[in-house]
Image (tube, rainbow, N blue to C red; front, side):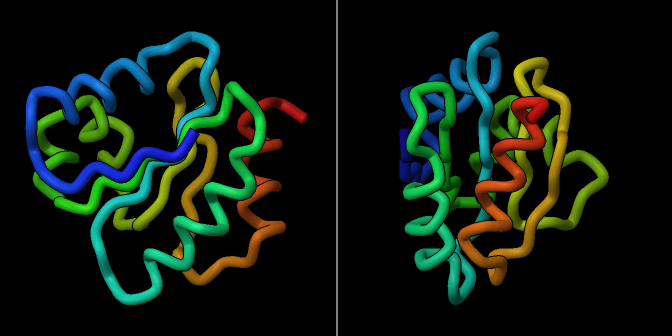
Length: 112
């Protein structure tokens, strides 16, 4: 599932927190709206073709600080992080990576 979250609202924070806290979800968090991010989101959305893969684009950086995404990005300058089923950061990606690198990040988070 791909969710594009543009601003800090109670609903958007709830979407983030529920997705991260879900025990059966691999979550890819994308922060910011730098050039090229939209294209990355398109590739990530294609790679999230399984029901346990969520892609959340946090266009407003304030969404990171307002939600449980803050812990996922703690100590990282990456634009993209992938969380495994236990909400541990399993990958950090640059928005310039190709489709197969995104699929690989999902697969590694799944323990494949």
